[in-house]
Amino acid sequence: MKLGFGLYRHMLNRAHYDFARQCGATAVIVHLVDYFNTSERVPRDQPIGGLNGWGFAGNEDEIWSVEELRVLRREINDAGLELYGIENFDPAHWYDILLDGPRRSIQIEKIKQILRNLGAAGIGCVGYNFSIAGVAGRKHGPVGRGSSIACYMDGLDVGNQAPIKKGMVWNMIYGQKLGDEDLPTISHDELWRRLRAFLEEVTPVAEEAGVRLAAHPDDPPLDRVRQQPRLVYQPRMFDWILEATPSASNALELCLGTVAEMTEGSVYETVDRYTRGDAVAYIHLRNVAGKVPHYRETFIDEGDIDVLRVLGILKRNNYRGLIIPDHAPQMSCDAPWYAGMAYAMGYLQAGLKAVAHSPA
Image (cartoon, rainbow, N blue to C red; front, side, top):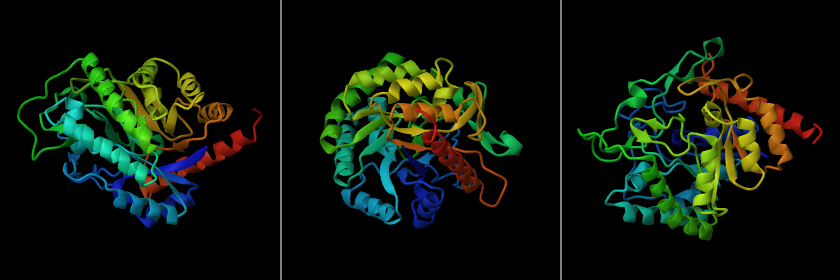
């Protein structure tokens, strides 16, 4: 097992690479999409959202080039880290794939070229969330232990129930501005049809490029968010993704915090089921207390997940992929995000050592 860090775009510099190494990370997952480009908050923690989304998507006409990806990989390697993968496509590159719009075929070709570019740059994984609404309806506040700042959800409200305006998908505005009309609601079956079509077209290219597509479950895991359907809001639905196009390049980004928020199933059974083979590309490991629509993120040593039990299952199943603490409460100090993440990394480091020395 590898222990790593997830770094947002504004963190892609030597200071953050060194911080990751100091915490014991050997690899990173990086976000190339700038979620904070119009945020009023200091960009130091996960984006939360709002009715108008996180900001503007990138340039539709510019995809990540082989050269810029190679430069990024070299910088990360020079800091003593592996660039394990990229997390999330830019909505500017695939909004009509998600919406089944008129530019779908053009954007399918863009995604195929992105996969080829990743492979040519030696980057073997890309996480994605096939979702129209994206992450929405959560809040941020002093709800953690000792009044630490953490993400939470407190029931169904306008933040997760209001319709999305045209011009926005996956929490980001892909045009010049939001439209006045609401985005039409679609069925679950229609969203699954769109995903299957996407995977059927791009998975062969991912195979040729040596890149794994890793699907993230829906967070928060409700059946609908902002009047749009969700794909993976219960653990059994991971099967549907894997069965859509059986391939080593069609894999999972197993987010255990999200799985713990689900109203059905077991975190431990889910971990065991999908890491027995090679279905999991990498794991998000955070802790939470509660289920949707009432939950809060916690420090990794509390909450509903027995982290040591999870690590024991991973050891038994000989899981060799990456684990990252995707979120952590912000602590009361001059560097809240760094302190929270360092705490999570220290706990995971100790947990991995304890599991390594325990009987099989």
